[in-house]
Each structure stands twice: as C-alpha cells, then as structure tokens.
Amino acid sequence: YRSLGNGHSSPVSPLKLFGQAKKQINDIFKHIKEYIEETEKFYEDATRYVGSVVSEEVTTSMKGYTARVQGITEVLCRDHMKVVLFGRTSNGKSTVINAMLRDKILPSGIGHTTNCFLQVEGSDTSEGFLLTEDSDQPKSISNIKQLASSLSSVKLQENSLIRILWPKDKCRLLREDVVLLDSPGVDVSPDLDSWIDKFCLDADVFVLVANAESTLMQTEKNFFHKVSSRLSKPNLFVIQNRWDVSVNEEDAMEVKNQHLDRNVQFLADELKVMTRSEAKDRVFFVSAREALLSRLHQDRGTSTPVGALQEGFQGRLFEFSNFERKFEECISKSAVKTKFEQHSEGGKLLMSELRLMMEETYDNCVEQMDDKTKFRQEKADRLDYLDKQLRLLSNETKEKIKAMVEDVERKVSAALNE
Ligand code: GTP
Ligand code: MG
Image (cartoon, rainbow, N blue to C red; front, top):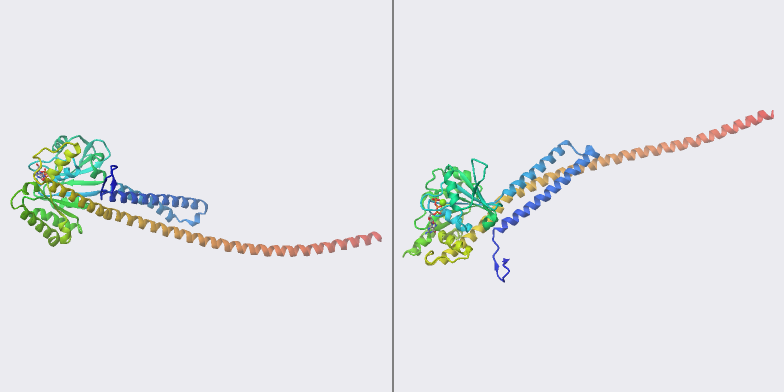
C-alpha cells in the first residue's frame, strides 16, 4: 500500500512488480558488466607482465562477453508488458483501451473504425507522435481528431502496424511499461495466422472484447484456438462489453449466467488453458463506454451528466476496475517470468563460463609458480654446492701459497746466509 499523505492509502499497482524486477535485473547486469571490465583489465595486465598465463583464446572470448552483456542490457531496456485486444468489429476494443488509459487516445466509432494494428506505447516526450512501418519519420499528433485524420491519410493495410507513442506522464499504464495493441475486427480480417505470428507471439495477455448482446462467435473462438496452438498456456481474459445495453432487459441475469457458463466452458473445457474456477475469474461484464466517460469526468473534476450512465453503472464501473486489477496482476507476473527468466538464464550461463575461464587461468598460474619454485630450489642447491667447493678450494690454495711463501723465504734466507 502507498500512503496518499491524507491518512489514507491506495493499493500499490501490481504492475510495479515488473518495474522492480526490471530495475533489479538491470542492476545485476550492471555488476556483471563491471566484473567483466575488471577481469578484462586483469587479463590485459597479465598479458603484459606474465604473457604465458593468458592464451589468445581467452583474450578473444573476453571481447565476446562484453558484447553479450551489452546485447542483453539493450533488450532489457526495451522489455515491456504487452496486451493484445481483439474481437469483432464495433465490440468496443478501442473504447476499452481508452478507458484503461483514461483518455480518448484511439479513434472509436460506429462501423469498422480500426483498420490496422494500433500499438499504444509510452514515450518520454511531452507530445504524442506516430511511427509507421514504412518510415523512420515520426508524425506528430496532438489530439484524437488529428490522430484519426493522420490514420486515414496513411495508406493502410490490415496487417500493418502503427505505433502511437503517447506521453508517459499522461497515463499510468504507459508509465509502468504496458504496451496495448488494438486490432481490426477478427471478422473482417481473413489472415489471422499471419497476425498472430507478426504481433502476438511476444504478448503476455490476450483480451477478447466480446459483445454481451450476442453469444461468442466462432470467429472469436478461432482466434483463441490459434493463439493457444502457438503459445503454451496463453493468459486469456474475456470482456463481455456493452453490458449497459443488455443489463436492463428482463432476462439480463439469465443472459449473464448463460454467457458466463459458455465462456467458462470454452476457456476451461474446450481450450483447456485453465481450470473452471480460474476461468470464472477471467470473465467480466462491463461497459467500456461508461468507464471511459466517468473516468474522463473524474479526472477533469467535473460531474458526469445525468443520463449519460445507465442505471446500476456503479456495479459495472466496479467490475471494470476489478478486471484491471486481475489483468495487472496477471500481466506483470507473466512478463517478469517470460521476459526476465530468459535474461537471468543468459546471465547465469555467462557467469559460469567466466568462472571456468578464471579457474583455468588460476590453475595455470599455480602450475607455473610451482615450476618456478622448483627451478629456483635447484638453482639454489647448485649455488650452495659451488660455494662450498669454492670455499674448499680457496682454503686449500691459501695453505699451498703459505707453504710456498715459507719455502721461498727459507730458500732466500739460506741463499743470503751463504
Ligand atoms: P472497430 O475498430 O471498428 O473494430 O471497433 P471497436 O471494437 O474498436 O469498437 P469501438 O471502440 O470503436 O466502439 C464502437 C462503438 O461502440 C462506439 O460508438 C463506442 O462508443 C460504442 N461502445 C463501446 N463500448 C460500449 C459500451 O460498453 N456500451 C455502449 N453502449 N457503447 C459502447
Ligand atoms: Mg477500434
């Protein structure tokens, strides 16, 4: 819980888990990098002073380690949590995203509105901008009308991607590294396979935005079938949207139970990606339109006009927040696991290779040191022997010379006497 400074506290978003893990793993790699630099310096010095300890192989592999850590750190910086929203046209996919972002960022409307993939990501800039696949040139957008016209002015293909870089300081989700992908209706796009390959394989969570006014269609189910055949145990959520429209019908409760039954049966029995009780926690009856509207007014500090929200809207708003909470828990856990597990494995492998190399170098050094000590000992023994010999020799010589001198002296004095 985070203190709000007014005696109250608000629950800390589960998304923080991702940010914390990202920071932690980043710090670990920073340390690994420092360690590699230190090792590299050690090897450089060793090559300079005791060349024979380090083989050329070692020096080249050191360069490889630096590049590997650099590569992992770069990927790490780009890592994010990704959610893909899909469903039939006009079910309210774009409205759900806007409600989650608490801002009218994506164009929504009656008819087939979104006709390519729109990815909303956070940016550190103060203004939003667009990036299309065909150019590196950012296109500016300052409001939704301009975005809608920018989108219609670029020639779009269904499976093309437009990235909307939106200021992080305007949206909490974007600040926490969530990337949201809006898609064209599954009913208007024939090529679901290439969609999945191109946009969904790195997704952490999939949200099906269904229309509570009708039952789940085969085209919608097909998408989940395809996703679960490509990814093992994908994280799936179902939003029964437009609940504000159906909830006031006489048989609303019956309809709700029927939807819930069928959705649970689909997720648990047909797809087999979760248990029945888990599946019950993955279906939400909401109104994205009401959620967006009330949030916009709430953030502006104005009251939502009477009649804009249908009777019983509080329950649907609560359900929308409930969905977000479950979604946030799920996406952060999944992203930490899938994204960072791979990096930590990479880091561990690198460190064990480095350790092996250091151990080899150490063994090498010890061996060479032993050789040198032995050599030194032998040399010392020889010197000792020589020393003794010399000493012996010099003693003998001294005696001889003394005898010779005495002899000469004797002879000389005898000669003088004579
Ligand atoms: P495409 O981009 O065309 O595939 O549609 P979409 O799924 O993105 O739907 P969009 O968000 O554009 O919404 C379609 C229309 O439905 C808009 O006029 C929304 O205002 C409206 N709408 C969305 N959600 C709700 C809802 O919960 N209740 C009601 N009553 N209307 C909604
Ligand atoms: Mg749309």
